[in-house]
Image (cartoon, rainbow, N blue to C red; front, side, top):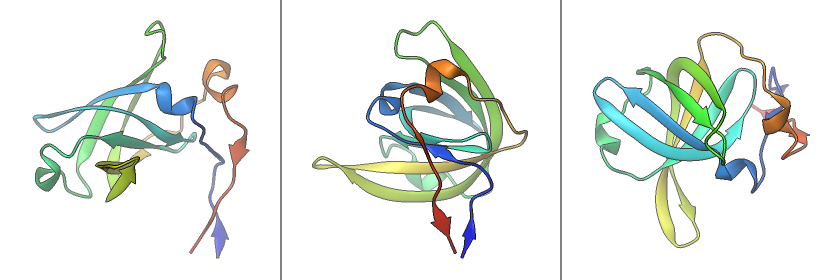
Amino acid sequence: MERRKADRYFSEEIGKFKVRAKIDEIGINGFLFDISELGVGIVTQMQDANRILAGSNISGFVLSPDERKKIHFEGSIVRKEFILQGEIEKLLLGVKFSVKISLPDYLTVHAPPVGFMVD
């Protein structure tokens, strides 16, 4: 097993940050699942799930809960899976940023970093 190259931030509060993105002609409206300097997990409804493919380019922004601050990103889809949130099945998209970003304090203050082991 190896450690991720960057700590991920994950919490209930982070889940309140909205994500607006575009994959080809598909609009994505969702919420943060987790985030790091290298990528982001986006939870969204399953509309157009079959049209979203690993390797697809994505661009968009993370919007603070008060809708005053944005973090823009570009990258590619590296993971696509279905998860249960409460009783509802949703789509989780894993995005790897094309360029490392700096996470602002207003986002990281909502959760301690969590380093995961991956294989």
